[in-house]
Each structure stands twice: as structure tokens, then as C-alpha cells.
Image (cartoon, rainbow, N blue to C red; front, side, top):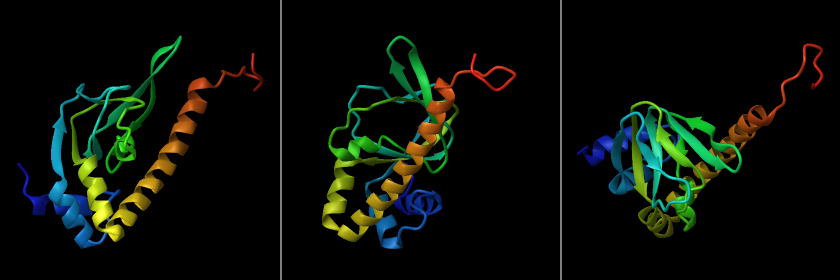
Amino acid sequence: MIEKQAVTELLRELRFTADLPGEALDEIARIASVVEFPAGTPLFQEGAENRALYIIEHGRVGLDMHVPGRGRIRVLSVGSGDVLAWSALLGEGVMTVSATALEPTRAVTLPAKEVLELCARNHEIGYGLMRHLAVALAQRLVATRLQLLDLFSEPTGTDGFRS
């Protein structure tokens, strides 16, 4: 098991948490743990409950969604510094995608209930975390839109017009 000081240092290096104040990193480290997923391991399944937030240290995770009539479709892949399972913080905890480690992956995991309690106890930390989460979600939205445009675009002919 990794010591809390090592988790604090790890959080200091991750894009999602790097610029949070030291006090915030220490508080987050107290509730965090580090998990490893071999390639091919599911982190969570679409439609299932999940009560933890993940911040990827290294590795890649594929996010897949079941699309009626098309089956399971990869909508995005994420890597170092990215956040997964943010909906656990919204009280729902029901996953809208499935996540699978595409390569050996190491992540910091934060229990959603304890994150929300920390945010309620310390509004400065809460504001910082939620602001970072909002930025991450905005970036994810743009990346997903680009992925979907590519996924659903029609091939064009050599003259540049759709067939």
C-alpha cells in the first residue's frame, strides 16, 4: 500500500490536481488510494453503479457505449491526468459508458462520498476540485464531439462531395 505522502506527491504531478494548494492535496491524499488495472480489465460498466472517481496516472482507458443497432462503440480513450467516473460525484453513480484498461493503467481513486464530504467541510478545496472538474468535463465534451463527428461522418468521394 502506498503511503499518503507518496499519494500527495503523485497528486502534485497529475494534470488534474497539479495546481491545487498543498493543503488540498494533503486532504485529498487522505481519502485516496492507488489502484492498478492490467490491460483488458474493466474499471466499470455502462449502467452499473460506481461510487469512485478515478484520476489516471499512466496508461490508457477506452470508453465504450452501447449504441442500439450498432453495438458497443468506442467513444473516447483517455490517459495520464484524465478523470473518469465523474458522475459518481453527482449522486447518481450510474455509469453512462463502460471503461476498460487498454494497457496497464495506474490510477488514483477517490470515494465519491468522501470527496463530497471534504467539499462540504472545506469550501475552498471544494471550489478548487469542482472548478478543475468543470474544466476537465469541458475538455471531455469537446473531445467527445470531435470523436463523434469522425465516427458518424460519411466518406467523401475524390471530388470532395458525399457519395
